[in-house]
Length: 292
Length: 135
Image 1 (cartoon, rainbow over the protein chains, first blue to last red):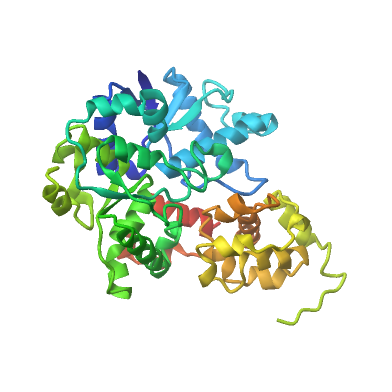
Image 2 (tube, rainbow over the protein chains, first blue to last red):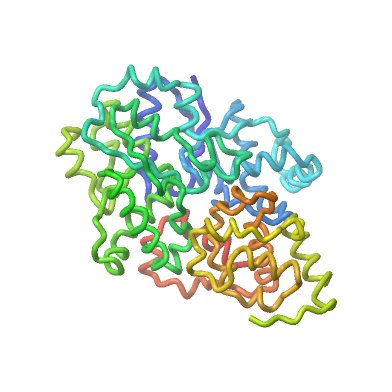
């Protein structure tokens, strides 16, 4: 299987650990991944204004890049990219008049976009195209000792029309963790927003959210949190520093990307995990659990 | 708060603009409060999401555009997912932010972000923040 891949800005910068573990895992699972040539920023957030066509051009332009690569699917491992690309795509498909305005604006592109590319998230590829049974057969290092709180954030499964799992109680991450040999815990805060972009100018709000989410995870028996969005990862991991200043009774907890859990179970070493990029080090727990 | 509702408030250009930008029918809301009950940012807001819709229905332009609440929304879409009437509250709040931003009333100034913050935060945070808080 060959897939066109859209990395997005953060996977190429602060979150190399998430990209490298994703690419390693997909390779181990027999998926050939080809990064889009000349991809551009998706805009990170979908424009919610009804009259806003201009901001749909950036995500839709990436669909043209995918068509040029001969792909009919475009995969990303970032929830925010997934949400923005998929919603812009859905809007283009549902509004031919808006799509023709977008195409007119992109007159210098060699082809018009016809709405015929599917946007998929890496988790969706693992669940629906590779299959959990196939993943299970490839596990060489079961995640024994990891009690995982699966945190979805907002953009993977909201709104409903672009979601590939339930919008209130998704389970794809728990199922993946179980297949990898870990123990998913029941987690009350799996859909509770981390504060998202408020982290730039109101980090104290994100600190409250991080405190609530991580405290709930700990009380519900987790020793690690798995996420699927690089912004959630930053807020829950790197913002533990400011959270500790405001809530000194916070019990810090390692935050990992779902792809890192896959990479560990599939036999990846530290060069693909890049644990040096984390704030709260996952190393001690992983070593204690015999996974490093 | 004591509010005087007159026919000058109702059906103003402001109400029409909010509905057009949001693509929503404000009058669909029957004030059940589910949006505010589940809002992760409600405790930081001066007016709650259901109150935002109420004030928007009645044309309270100044109260809405001067509120802190419209800048607290994190666009998590919990409200939209749960509204029994299908009102997209986050779109209404976006419309209110857009009315301010399109008049070049910036909520965030890039030059006010300290260099030590800029060097630490990932691009995904910075770009989304600028998309929501600047014109």
